Amino acid sequence: MGIGAGNGRRARQRGMAVVSALLIVAVIALLAASLLGRQSSFIRTTQGDQLRVQARWLLRGEIGEAQRVLRADALREPTTRLDGLWTQPFSRAASGQVAGDGGRLVSEIADEQGKFNLRNLVDQSGVDPDEAEVFARLCATVGVPRAQAGAIMRRVIVSLGDAQQPGTGAVSDEVRARARRLAESLGLPQELPRNAQAPRLRALEDLLAVPGVDAATVAKLVPFVTVLPERTWINANTARAELVAAGVPGLSLDRARALLSTRDHGQWFVNNGDFANRLKMPGLDSANVRMGVTSNWFRVASVLDTARTQFVQVALLHDDKAAMPRVVWLREGV
Image (tube, rainbow, N blue to C red; front, side):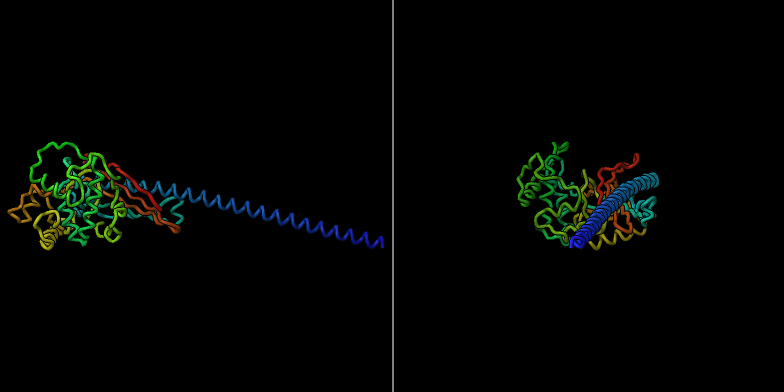
């Protein structure tokens, strides 16, 4: 009995030792798997960071290419036209690590002065009734309800209070009266505050925060409206017919389309007087039509498309035609 009991204890001890060894092995395996998982996660994170850094530099290179194209076009042709070098999108395969991921770069330059600039709604003396009428006509043409057009104007105007300064020229009583009536119709005080009452819009997408303005409305305005840091004219050589019709009082959409059809077939406007003459509207005061034939503001949109994701970059360039265009702002996203 004593010998059997001793053998049983030794057997149990050996069994416990085996179980303990197995538990230790299991713990070590779990720790090793956890370490390997952390290492793999760290490697993936590092690779992702490297990919993002390289993508950023590649996209910045697209801005440099756009600057070179705009500069070359300015030296080639004094007017800004739809047959310019800048109108051609440029696409190429990416380099470096991104190239191994199937990366490809596509960029496009857009003339922002072929659109109505919301900044025009306020001048040095306050609300600009002429520009407000242009915007109202444009909204009516593209199907934006009047109430939403008014909400957009009100939002823009209250954000530009600090842009008002004493005017350098005389403002007629008739213009002042129209400005007062416009302010009243928008629910604004006749004398606008000198301090901005809301953040300035930076991009058209910011209008989505305006009560009553939805994505469908913004989508209708995208081809025709922009937000720029300073007042601008509309480029008659790049604007669409809807905007040209809105910018010229009394000009129908059909006549605007016919006029731009000849333009797009090579009869570009050489100056503001040429545009006014070809309107064939003798009673029109050309001084009241803020149309030009050159542009100083361009938007560059670039996309780096890879097998795993897309990197997007949008930049606003100011081109004074005297030197290389400069970057005003830049936005990045994935």
